[in-house]
Amino acid sequence: MRRVRHTHFAATLLALSLAACGGSGSGGAKAQGAACAADGECATGFCVDGVCCDTACTGACRWCGTGGTTATGTCGNAPEGTNLRSGCTASPQSSCGNSGVCGATGACALYPTGTVCAAGSCTSGVATPPSTCDGAGTCNAGSTVPCAPYTCGPTGTCRTTCASNPDCATGYSCASGACAVVCGDGIVGPGEECDTGGTVDSAACVMSSGAGALRCHNSYCGDGYANATAGEQCDLGSATNGTAGACCSASCTLVAPATTCP
Image (cartoon, rainbow, N blue to C red; front, side, top):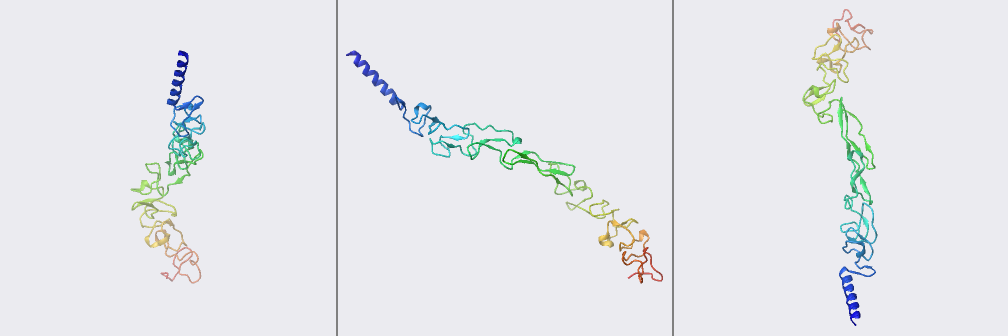
């Protein structure tokens, strides 16, 4: 009689213990999505991310817990931009490799398109923009850009304004905050053949303000501008000088008895 009572008492204790654990003798009884600490607590057999999950749900960017892309307890992709399982290790930004967070496809994401992977620079009047990631793991170098009419600035890029001539590329002068070709500054710039400075002609260079578009061009008989400094008395242009009836000879001297040209 005492043996029967002892056996009944032991069975009762076992039943109470199983009930307290939320399980049964053949496995856990917690439903999918319920909080858990071990596989044995779950009817599904999988305790993942702190809840009873429908599958083992493995992978750095998979998630079964709360705050995922699927219902709690259903395995799905981890939200984009998160690292809930700390499984995405960031690579150096210069590598354009793993960014340290999950992407939209359930895998660790690469650094996105446009991420700077190498700093820009500017040397000898040529700027190289920052290199950027292409989103597929490659760091693409920026295309070089000449700074002219400006020079390289202190920040590794081309200047866009000037304070003085040293801020301008060779052949340009600083005028009102902008680098430009200035005939008469004594600097031979793009489009100029010569520039002796000022507005006084030399024998070789037309500088007079009255010469119009011929300023800062080499002086020669036939250019259409009578350069007295070069010894010319007249110049009607190469197509007219020395022709019949012209007052100006082919050597840019007046034809007697003419003293002036129209």
